[in-house]
Amino acid sequence: MSRDEARHAGFLNKAMSDFNLSLDLGFLTKSRSYTFFKPKFIFYATYLSEKIGYWRYITIYRHLEAHPEDRIYPIFRFFENWCQDENRHGDFFDALMKSQPQFLNDWKARLWCRFFLLSVFATMYLNDIQRSGFYRSLGLDAREYDIHVIRKTNESSARVFPVILNVDHPDFFGLLDVCAENNVKLGAIANSNTPKFLQIFQKLPLYASTAVQLVRLYLMKSINTAKLEGSVR
Image 1 (tube, rainbow, N blue to C red):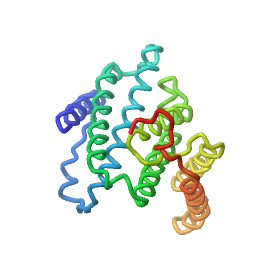
Image 2 (image 1 turned 180 degrees about the vertical axis):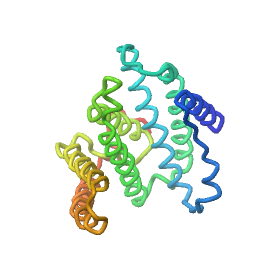
Image 3 (image 1 turned 90 degrees about the vertical axis):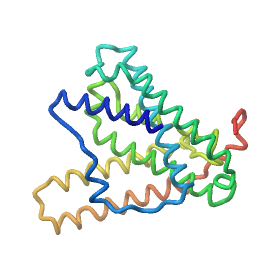
Image 4 (image 1 turned 135 degrees about the horizontal axis):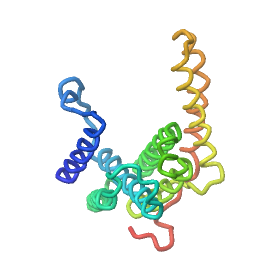
């Protein structure tokens, strides 16, 4: 996994050099404090990171295979092998968690799995909607792209997590849309000439609205994967 990620980083560094950019993350080990996380949290987060990465990359790759005129940079030609790396990493953490059933089989695991699924999905959705121009340059609609990726990642997670989110609930993506709209408004406020102390009061209702939507999403009845027909556990 380390070898694969190092190769990915090498691709990105080479690509950025074409635009006279470089990235050195070495300073992080000197300027950032370390935080301890329980292994199960690392397993949940890494599994979802790798699986959602797979579905993001393979979706872009398949779209560009069908529409080569939208391939704006050569690095997209390598996305198939790249995404298979991500998929393999996710499968490793799938097997790792199944070998440690105490990470999956109690009520706390159900609550944490819901939390991590929602956190990963909401973070991606808000970021991508805010940067929809990039996806337009690839011939993709950011919202439709994210909905597809979320559905596929949620389906993949059913193979290991005890619960998944009900992304087919009629309110699911509507609530995420409210969060995304709030996020865009927050960015507009931050970039305005309004004094900072007034910006705080302008942002508070938006933060509160986003928090309410996320709580509503978290409290939606989840899907018990053990009851899914054909689910492979």
